[in-house]
Image 1 (cartoon, rainbow, N blue to C red):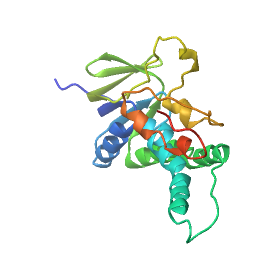
Image 2 (image 1 turned 135 degrees about the vertical axis):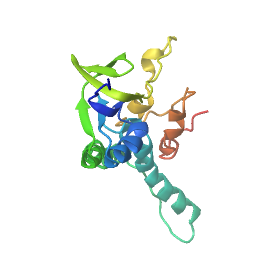
Image 3 (image 1 turned 135 degrees about the horizontal axis):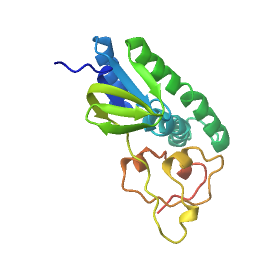
Image 4 (image 1 turned 120 degrees about the horizontal axis):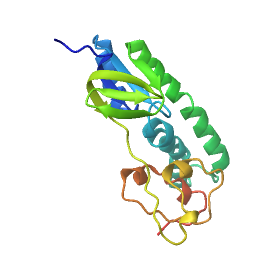
Length: 194
């Protein structure tokens, strides 16, 4: 007897690992479900890569002006709070855009926190969803250190949303997310971290 599942492939998490795979699978005719409790797209479009690129753009302009002094004149400054607000206008539509592409390809989006029950079942808010194949693509969360002064620490998501830059910063990380931090904090007259 052949087992019948709700989906051919059921994804837990909706970051890059999912939207790069779920859309093409659904477009090819596979029954695809995507379970996500947060923003569709995960870290890169919402709190990482796209935010960094947007925050970096004025720094690129500032550095170009500095290199061209003598050819161009004047000083270019960066208004951090305006830059952060601009970043939000760029990234806020991304989860909806990604979700739209997934649903247009034929994938179902299931909002809620998924709990893996067995090799073919994920429960979301008490409802079971089944898949012939399950892909766990839940990403990572920052690990908070238990050290004196940890109340002063913020993670990369918090950093990307700072309305005001601190005069000095120190970065402690081992994950690749630290490399997503923009050089912006060292450019608007701030002291470079050492």
